[in-house]
Image 1 (cartoon, rainbow, N blue to C red):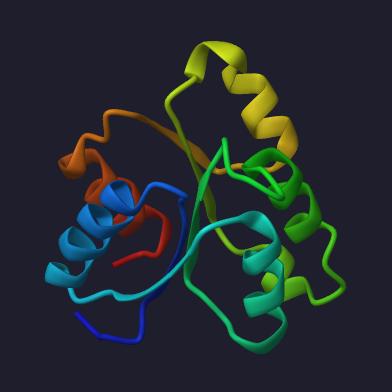
Image 2: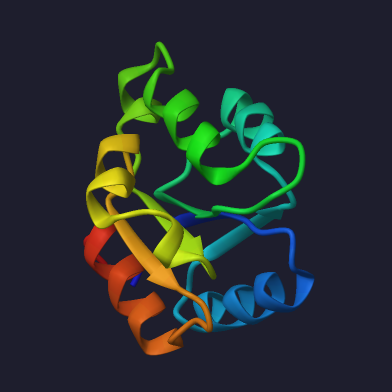
Length: 126
């Protein structure tokens, strides 16, 4: 496994952020973590990532708005990055709504960390 696989986690819960970071670092991923969708867009201007993990409920800009903005980016490589929704409110949206917004997959809280690793591996071809 190469350590060049970069994961951007946008999650306002530091507990979930830290757990996901530790689990994915153990899998040799390079992790960057932010607290909201606005920070995701700012960091994407400067850096490239293999995958984005977006919490749906975040302050300033939520995951649904953030995924739409990422998909609308002018750089094709950045706009096509795999994006996974992380949500504690899966009932608020249907799977079709997540897909229509631009998500590749959805992880429901409480996070199943085996599933997290499986989805990240699949979407980054690790």
